[in-house]
Length: 225
Image (tube, rainbow, N blue to C red; front, side):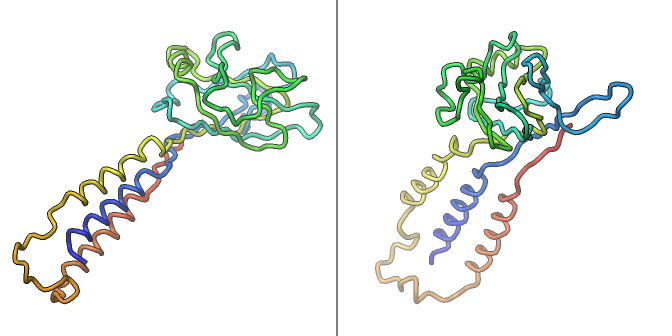
């Protein structure tokens, strides 16, 4: 194998690894102390749609139209229905997917659940994207991303980069390889690659490539509370 091809393969593989989905930030929901009981993990949204919590703007850095929002939660075993509504802080009117265009596979509210909320019956997590127009409202709001719901206790929120936005990077690498000169040596009588002496350079390149892959595969995660 030519050294050029070895390096091109390493670059392509490293690029593919770096475009894998990576968690960018995380936020844990807390129930604040009421003066009698200490702070505890999770925030219960109740049953009356009048109790809410929020994730402040400073915890939403990097939020964009390609970001996947992952929410983990628990549900009441004795609940009559289970629903979660993330919204943009406009009096509970700015649902994150108002036209049902960015989350077409999500299950929305039924007859006993508000239609502009996620039906989370039997679930412990949900992943969704936020419509670009609502992202602007969230970033302009003083409270960030807010939540109401029914029979749900919120545990954590994660913002995850969507790797699909960078899928074209691999294609660029392939094109560069295809356009590379066929051979640096113009002598037509040059011995084929399989008969060239082993100089050890390719082995070094492969080892370097393995190191690059290991470094590229690190998933960046910053825990915030």
